[in-house]
Image 1 (cartoon, rainbow, N blue to C red):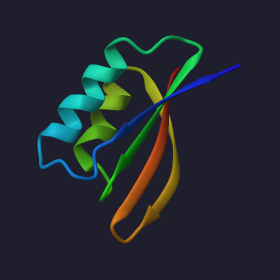
Image 2: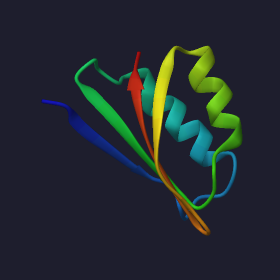
Image 3: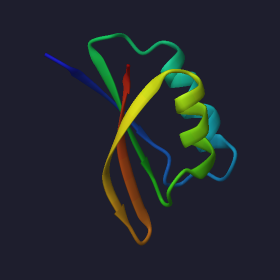
Image 4: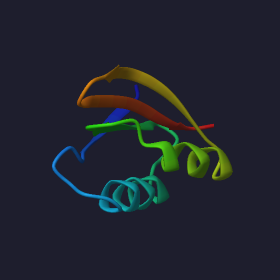
Length: 73
């Protein structure tokens, strides 16, 4: 069973959402998924995820709301 770790960064200003996401991913276990919630699409995070060997699934991409699940590959 996959455990979801929620990270809500909607109220934070740059670069805090990116910093917190990367810090959370450092400790992410194989059986866990990070659910990242933000106001906009995190453009800089996508490249970092790829470089660090993570995969993601976009759940919601709407005006003022973005959500995705991030997994270890």
